[in-house]
Length: 273
Image (cartoon, rainbow, N blue to C red; front, side, top):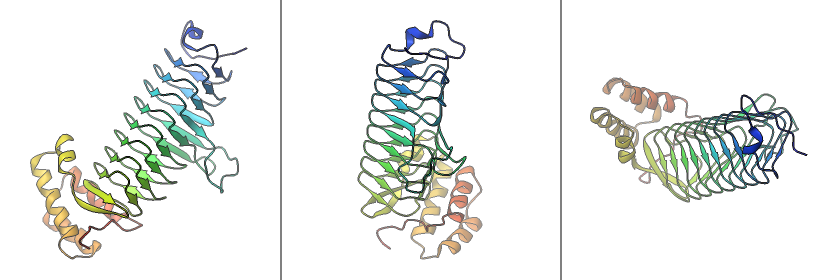
């Protein structure tokens, strides 16, 4: 017998397949669809209009936003693949309108009260992996079989190519692009393209910047920032100092400076270095 608690929805049973297993304490919003064989755990909350495909498993203390699409055989919010994990209460949070394709795995965090988070309007293609304690921003695309190791941070509008591997604790700045099969072991600054094994910065993500609606004036400043960082021969601290003096303030330039000041692992260099 399947017992379901659904918040604010009439005739909810018609949207939940007879073979799905939904814990009595799970909370489902309006118009949630749960496919055959799906399993939804005790502490799960699912927002209005989200669709859960066949054989999806959602466990742990997991919250999924509104109008998400989760395709068959995805696994979300289960225990992390981390030897340090000792059964503590931790979280997995998914934003609104995110698409999670087949066989994606998203682990909850290691550490009492810690979280793994994926933002709004992301696309995680088939077989991608988001490990414990990762923070993924909004409008991020992870192509097939790309993987984030623990504690990685991916800022907004990043595109990660298929089969790329991101080392633990690495940060990837907003509007960056990572090539397919890249091996990423250092922080990637915002607005650049990185590729290779090990990956190196190969240029500014000019197409991505244009598509993001960044003005031509700011794009010119970002090109100059790229030259200062990668073509001047300056140390990182000196490059930051030069950028502060030479470039007009804008949201994008300030974001770049903030990232560089906090690049604890050191930033990825170019193939010329």
